Image (cartoon, rainbow, N blue to C red; front, top):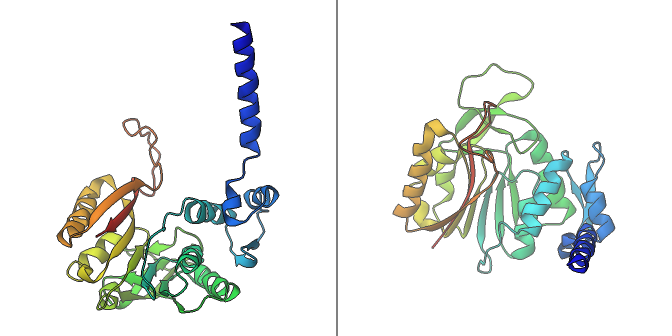
Length: 275
């Protein structure tokens, strides 16, 4: 018995040591040491070498999260035909664009990013990786062609503000385009990560989604607006989509005991819709 316990302890310690030196980032060509550098980028760093080219960014936590989610977990992994048409709504600094072009080099990508800082970095990354057939658009995706109030956070949290807010350094007016106008031909992949605007946009596109073959939606919801998620799923069903749902962020680890802290969103879900 003592020998078994001792053996188990040794095996457990050895397992922890092996795990500490495990390198899932070798999948994307990073050595163990390069992966450590990525995890511990200095707060003031603005560049990182990935796939032999320079990635430009401002937020190291968001960069690390994007590399893990997009390149390791491959959240956007999908089979598409040659010369596919892709719309990336909420391209941020372009990590999703980079992944999709790696997987589908002949694809045409229209990448929407309204945030001033993110858009400039998106442009720099497109140039850095010499991406072709990739068009960045400095406009928000919305339900009409208009000018809207927008919160320029320079991060993944930038969003359309539907409530009237006083102009500040971060709150500005920007151009918005109606997504429905872009769905007049076959779209092989539509990605929507637009920080809470997805419900209004999809509701407006309800009768045009027959031209879309695959949709990724990062849903941002609130308990007092549960009808929005219900209607989004109904819209997908009406358009003959099957769907799969995963939690994008564990907002409440104990949902029955949520505490009193105010969250930006009560629900963050990834919805994968396909035919």
